[in-house]
Every structure is written in structure tokens, then in C-alpha cells.
Image 1 (cartoon, rainbow, N blue to C red):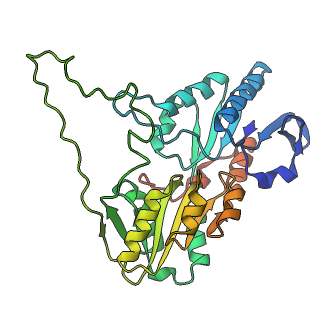
Image 2 (tube, rainbow, N blue to C red):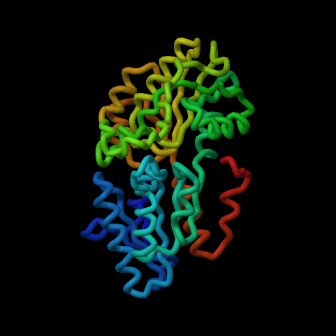
Image 3 (cartoon, rainbow, N blue to C red):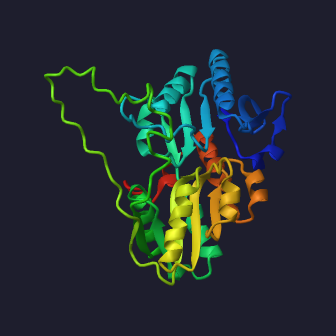
Length: 329
């Protein structure tokens, strides 16, 4: 079993010279588990994962289970224009290397599970985030769950229904993280000349979209605004949403997400913004970012990962970990 684990588990395992963590279950040497902390370079980590999975496969391992709390390249799961679907490539590589089971958490799109031809358990971090809201936000009954774009409205609706709160949606926000220009999918670059098209052909062109001015659908005046999403990487869209909510009268703004990549100068921008607190889980190590920005808080989700590993090891059902999860969650 290859586990990409949070650093909290390292103190309980034996670390080898190569950075691997090796331990046996129930003192049984026939059931060994490997673990390695995520490196700063995600591509290096992916390659190390594939090599070790293949090494286990060639050593006749009965089952090779990968525990990857944050599945890398999960945002590149759709084909835009004639671009590549990197998530599909990564899934194929893992299956080809010999992975027999995958445990992950809050995939960017649930359909990524279909890229694998092995069982995939997509665990949810929302119970831990909901518990944080109820225990750490004293006046959460006066809160409203906010979706920073219509694309994340389903997730916001799920939080709102479980907390019995209202919902608000910000419409007209620029989707920088999802645009074709930002993720480099114009390959080759756009050709403005139409000389290659035969003169006799008149192909109708799709009218480009024009985003309307930013509007908030829902009442946030005098209330706590809780923005929910699955990934926080480039924080520009969150900062713009926070400014809009402040203008509409929200007196406190929280941002909650499962995966806190917080790349580049995100900690500095959060510290200088109108956001009061950013809550993320420890699927990705972000100790450095927390030192740079005290507003960043961490929710530990190692409990559900360890329970998933225990159940698979003992051959128990995983259904208990997916109770009360609907089709839209």
C-alpha cells in the first residue's frame, strides 16, 4: 500500500533513508505499508508513486492501495477546445503501474472516478468542515452559505441544507482558474487569420460570452458569509467575492475548502483582504502558509483516512463512511 499521508502520521511510523515510511499491520510482515510525504514538486511525487507501485506489482503484491488525499491535476478533467484531459492520463498511468484501489478525498469532479478501471473511494471532508462551523463560529445561526460562482452552488446548497441556513450565489464573477487562457490550453495559440478556411464556406462562429456585472443573489446584509469551495489555489476570485460581500453588508467573511493549495503569494493576499478566516483541511501540507498568515486555520481529516485504511485492511464495508451522502454531494 502506498500512502501519501499528512505529516501527523509520520511520528508513528519508521522512516527509511529514502524518505519512505515502512510499517506492518498487526506486527505481520506479510502485510506491509509504504508511506511518503508529499514533496514540493508534485510531478516528482507522482513519478515516485508510479515507480513504487510498479515495484510492488513486480514483487507479486496481492493488492496495492493508493491513499492520495488530494488528487493532483484534478482541475484538468474536462476537454476545452482540443486540449488534453490530464486527469485521465494520470488515472491511466496509475492503473497501468499496478494500483488496485484508490482512496482520495473531494475530487474536483465526481466523474474523475470514471477515468479509473479500479475501485475509487471518494471520501468527503464536509462533515469535518460542518463540525468546525458549529463549534468554532458562535453565531453561525446568523450565517449564510455563499457560492462564489454558479458552478459551486451545489456544494453551497449541500452545506446550507445540513446547517438549516440560507444560501447566496455570486453571479458575474470572472472564472480565472477555469479559463482556457490561464491553464495554458491554447496549444497551438489561437490563429486570428481565417485564410485557411475555403472562401465558399461560411461557418457560423459562436458568439463569445460576456459576463454580467457582479451581483449577489440572496441577502447577506448584517450576516456572517461563509464561502465554500473544494480547492483554494489562486485566491483572486475569493478576494473579489469577499469585497462584494462586504459591500452588500456582510460583517464577517469565512472561506472554507477541502484542499488548500494556497500557491504563490496567496497568504499575503489573504492577510491583507477582507476575509476574516480561511479554513482548510490537511490534505495538503501548508505549515509555511500558516506562519505567513494567521488567518489560515486547519481541520484534521486523518481520522476518516485511517478508518478507510482499517476497513479495507480488515475487509469491512466502506458504506458507513458514505452514509447520508446524496447524489448531488
